[in-house]
Length: 284
Image 1: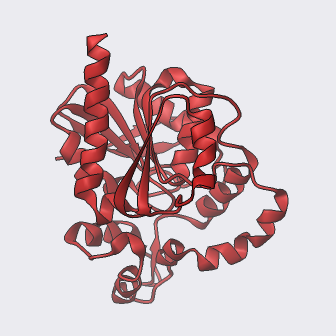
Image 2 (image 1 turned 45 degrees about the horizontal axis):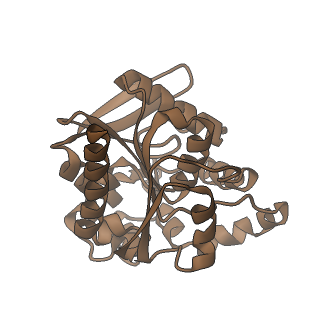
């Protein structure tokens, strides 16, 4: 079972889940508006052979929620401070959605931190024209997963909305727990997401400013492409094929949150990649 831990620095308090049975380090990074608990099944599955850590990124879950500074630089600094606390010089690093772009930027800026990289249906890999920012207020309204932020008059209203969202297809006990722990009740009795408006706006601003790729990356990389994810066309995959020189691309069933809606195949895919890579490394 995972244990909830925390890291305190002069800048931030970072909350994280830790499975500390195995030795090989694995860092699991959640996407926008999620939190570490989305990796609970994968963490359990990997724990026999791997030392697994899944943080709540700044602005999410139980971690600090500053009013500003959601830059990639600061988020990466949070993660490197966490790795230093754990005594990890490097790790196998998995990023989903927005943190897939974060992982790509981190890998080109500080590749020594990576034993391997797993990109799960990443988004926003390119730098966006400044004109795109004008469309963001509308984007907030139509992106389905952001409808889980609230506010909701009652918890029952919140659950009714959550059951319509792709990441909660099936509404399993784990999905219900994840959603419940993503919310907080305010003094006025309404329910809202722990993911803050400041974090939402700051992260969207940041993903516009910096491209994910500008040069080749040689780190062993697994790209996980859900059948109903956001990366469905070859033109979307071209940047990854161009810049990732040690790339393996694998399809899995499910949508953008395949690890929640089709976890068995997803977990098997991640585990197979990591174990083979570790065994190959030991034979060298």
